[in-house]
Length: 81
Image (cartoon, rainbow, N blue to C red; front, side):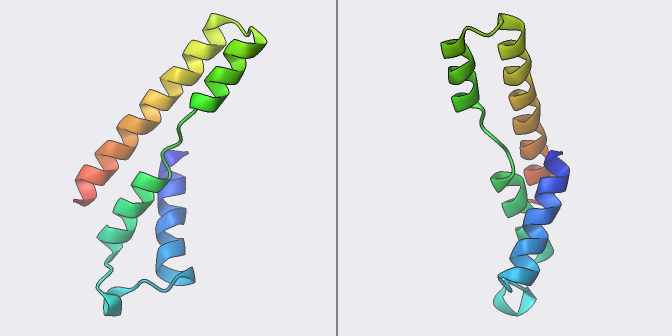
């Protein structure tokens, strides 16, 4: 899902906001931006689950998914760099 968000964010920067090669904004730049912006942070969701008394298993699964997304975003960023 993170990769889809990365590509959609890059497409948005290139075509909707018109940051293109003429302005010095390459596809690598757009994909680096996309990898940074598409990584989600579930801190609010985990805090809400703790407040509602959700099971530890659900909280751990959401935290694990967040770590996986952050790791994938870092790898995509470094590849584009």
